[in-house]
Image (cartoon, rainbow, N blue to C red; front, side):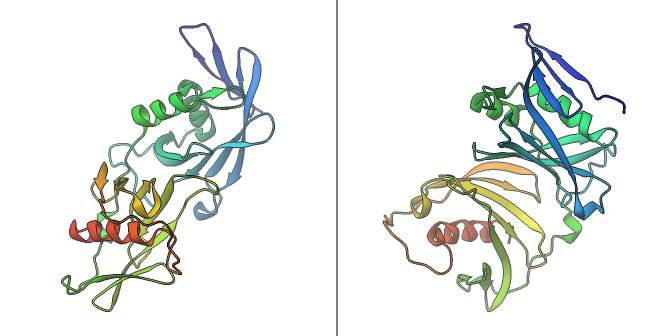
Length: 255
């Protein structure tokens, strides 16, 4: 078996390596990478989990196959990395040739492992500096024709309706125990159009939004003068905030 070896030398003489499934810093094991076949790619591509020495998952890296390849770079995949416990995700390019080695090199260079966990500041800097915004398959982006003067309704089953027609859907991706709510929004076809995260539940005043059609990441205001103390809803625990977010998506031609 050919060993995978990645070395990054920092200005503080610390050396991080990835070899045979293990990350080491100055010769000490700090994390391990476990791979599994990605079902959507018929097993041609692997997904990965990075765990600490106690077996606790720190990073989940999966093929972002909902995005087209970069026409200027057909030698890379887009991977979605979820940083467990920090309520953050990011998209990164990983080489098709030696995907495991490429991902190992990426994470070694990020210098995000510290005391058996992820260093929050280093991880946030890594996402901000090296994260990518993948392009959308614009030929599949077809909005439902309807009368937009009608009110927008959130229905049970996570469906969004307007003018009596289903115009979209939402998916709750919030990790268990997290104080940051995370949602995806998609067309009825299932094509994802936006990812959002926010704090404050139904009293959220803004959200961080990534819109896939135009590859934009921005902070979107969703102000409300209401003070919701408790919401009993069969639609969603964050129904009020979702209604304001969906209204913004419709007004800006994303749904």
